[in-house]
Image 1 (cartoon, rainbow, N blue to C red):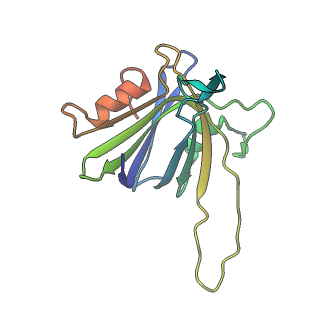
Image 2: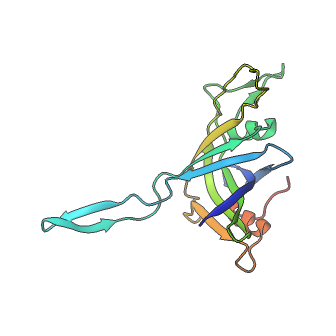
Length: 190
């Protein structure tokens, strides 16, 4: 399905029972959604050969879903939730050998070619800490060094789902209803 633009990202931090602990949003007012690339959702095909040729293609489930996100500015609260980082008494944000990122659910918000809102959701995954890149200012002006994060996703334990997609072209589809479905229940307050 063709997409137009990229409005927002909606995150839910999950506890050990896949219940929403806290929600976060990246939009035009906070963080800034630049891009998202979802790969590995197609099943891995395995061809069985018999009688001197291809006989059967076995394909089921998903492969290895990965999501790469580009965010203008990964704000501190979301950074801490995504990476599992800690803050010391001195105010230093740290990542170490015992750091464990939380599972997250995410809904990506865009439009289809007809202007309907289109939502893509991933039920359960963990993100890595973004790499840091510093560059000097040049004579063409200051450029913002944006954040890129990647996540790996697995099936949600209660129903085996990994990815969902919906459009407001379908009656009854709303952002809140889709978030509730993807986040695994009633969405928690922000």
